[in-house]
Image 1: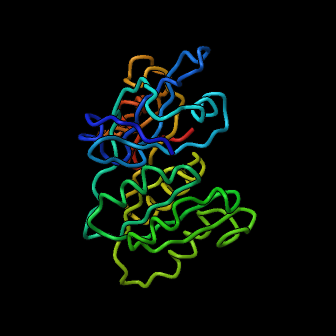
Image 2: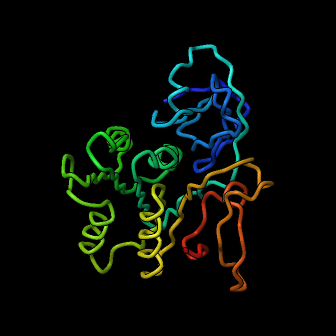
Amino acid sequence: MLVLAAPAAAASVRPGQFIHLRVPRLDSAVLRRPFSVFGASRDGVSILYKPIGRGTRAMTSLDPGDEISVIGPLGNGFPGPDDALTTVAVAGGYGVAPLLFLARESQTRGVVFLGGAAAGDVLCVDEFTELGWEVHASTEDGSMGVKGLVTSALDEWIDGLNDDAPRLEFFACGPEGMLRAVGERAIARGWRGWLSLDRRMGCGVGACLVCVQRVQSADGKVKWARVCRDGPVFEARQIVWD
C-alpha cells in the first residue's frame, strides 16, 4: 500500500475513482499509471498495488517525504448502494481496492466475494469482516476458501437464496472475464450491476482515446465511451462486450 499526502484529492474522491500517477525514479516511463483509490482520510489517499512490472517495482523504492506527480481524482465512481437492495461486492485480486473503499463509505452492510489464483491473492478479508460484511473467499488452487472461480462461489450463494430474498445490486472490480460474468448474472435476473473496467490509459482525462469501450446509450445506439472519463464504472447493461 502507498499513502499519499494529497488533502485536495482526499476531500473530493469517491469510491471507484482513480488517480493517475507518474512513476518516480523511472525516467523511461513516459505515461502515467492509473490506480484505484483504496482509501481516503482527511490528509490524503492510499492505493493498493502489487510490484509486478517496472513501474510498480520502482514504486517500492519510495521513501517517506518523496514527492510524486499525481492527477486526480479522475473518472466516475460507484453510485451509493441502494439501501432497499442487498449489496454484493465481487473482487478479483487487487480489484478489491475500490470495493473496500465503497464498504467503508457505505451505511449498509453487504456480502463480498473475494477471489484469486491462490491464498496470497485474496486480500482484505479481515477488513471486510471488521466492517460487518459477510465474506466469501475462493481460490483457483483451493488454498483458501472454496476451490474455483469467484463466480462459482457467487452462483452457489445465489442459488441458495430464498424466493423472498431482497433484490441484489452488484459492485465488481477485477479481470474482464469476471466482470463480464458478473454483469451477465445481474442482467439475467433483472438486477443492477456496476462494473469497474480496467484499461490501459494514456492521458487519463479523455483526450487520447486509448481506453475506449463500446457502450449502448439510452436510445439503443452503440457508441464509444472513454473509460477514463465516462467510466471507469459502467452499469452492466451499458457495456457492449467484444
